[in-house]
Length: 203
Image (cartoon, rainbow, N blue to C red; front, side, top):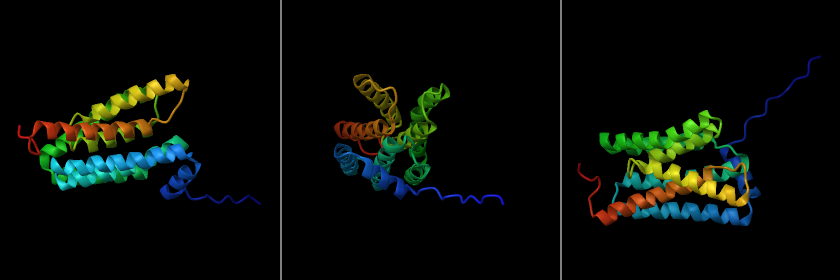
């Protein structure tokens, strides 16, 4: 008689997040909490320069990205469910902002994803990193179309320095992309505040 094999259902995002949290040392847990708090603080600061939809989106994406980064460190994989959820939130905010905002979001997505896609083509990255960068670039595009460049360059430089300093040949890129996203949003908010211009700035 043939042996019957039962296919086990895939773990949910909540299961994977719980496993990543339990496996994380205290320092990593504190970094995750601090990162989410900082991302939400940046979003709160954006209330003076951006629409409510953008503010809410920045906070939601930062939180989802922090969760994705934590899972990435644990599994070296990023859940598609988190990325798709974040992208849907960004799409709603972009649509509510009109054609210009939608264009900025698309530009942000492309300039964040294309460089990593080229590296991915050379087998240097996982496709999850490319998708993660695309989502973060799109979210950053709500503030500035070139925010995606900051996300990618910060992630590349900081992770490279860390890898060299720690003699690591492989590391999760997710946390570095997340940090780059929070930094890009902070720079975008600061630039508008210092410029004293209304949102959106007239062309």
